[in-house]
Image 1 (cartoon, rainbow, N blue to C red):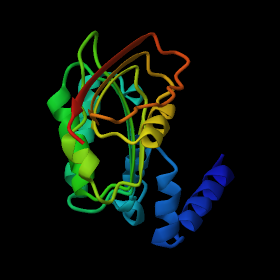
Image 2 (image 1 turned 180 degrees about the vertical axis):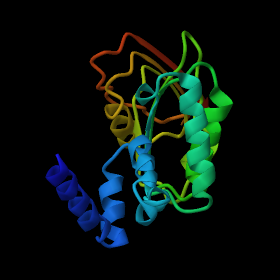
Image 3 (image 1 turned 30 degrees about the horizontal axis):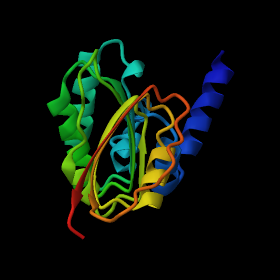
Length: 207
């Protein structure tokens, strides 16, 4: 037993001797809940997790929703103004929309480059994405897992609409509101095998 303990100790020391960049990369492969736990390993690891550019949060990793929200608040507060490269949020929302909105806005203010969202509202509630999300200059990748989607577009590009909707394969309820030119032909394909309800409401405007 003693030899195993010494071996584990030496192994831990070897890992701790790695450069900060390597340690951060290792932690970036873990959900944030577990990377934060490395804080207690040693002085070398203290607050190392806060330098990781990725945040990966899933409320199923927590025994209750309240504990999850408190954890996310503390993580974002402790990180301060440091940039967020990738932000993944998977939660079954209990109607706490302002809080989730604030988390996403924080990611936007921290120059997020990749945003992966799976927000499942409770019952028939509807969660609206922050408007600032679509004006975020640093955002390169947006992943959404949606069952209900309402889109409002002005003078839409057919190819752009098709590409956007093709990424929403799980959508079941789709509403498209749009403004098109008076003589414009709007023609696009919707690839959503699970689609159950489709509403399209178009208004014409002078060309």
